Length: 277
Image 1 (tube, rainbow, N blue to C red):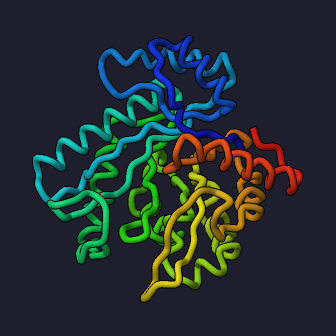
Image 2 (image 1 turned 90 degrees about the horizontal axis):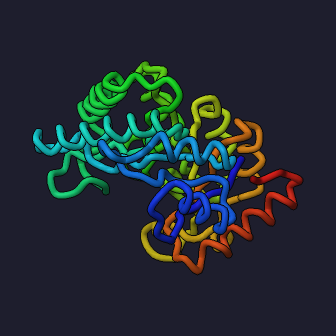
């Protein structure tokens, strides 16, 4: 497993990008380029391979199930371009969320989120995205969220079975699925459930933490690794059983917080006798 995070400096070519990555201390990185005809993806992919750096994710952040059909088509096209970029650059996966049927937003609670009709639209659009690219070495993945499909390991499995495409995988963010006190307090058991059910399908992971506040009715906040309640010992031990090049990305932190979070994760890995690249 390989720890990664965002590169907070500017770069203009593969060589300066590699230098910035090496200075950061990461061996796993997000895609350095956006989809487009002049993205120079192959050159960045070759540079990463030569330097022993793993490109873990291409973000396709958009709403392919938007209630507005024009916006939905634009989002689907963006996802197809992003998946194609992941294939060409050699990224482990292309990641998005499923989106919402709410015309006012692309992520968040909404009454239609768990309708059967919504599930079927997600399946249809996911197939369309994958079928347009037919990836051979990367995967299209949907990051779990607390209020939309997939919000549990079983919902992930339901989507895998329904989509029924070899190019479809799992992006694991366990914090996003800890959406009640029961999962919070038994997050070690929940983490084991995630890996037992989804292990063969997981392509990349996020590293965050979570804390339950003493507010009515239930109030859960994500936070930096080491400042919450997530059992990182269990998380890392389960991750270590998967692909040795599995990427674990820190996110949603400040530039000052990332080094502290990385130090915490590496400390837990060392305590567990694990090698974290």
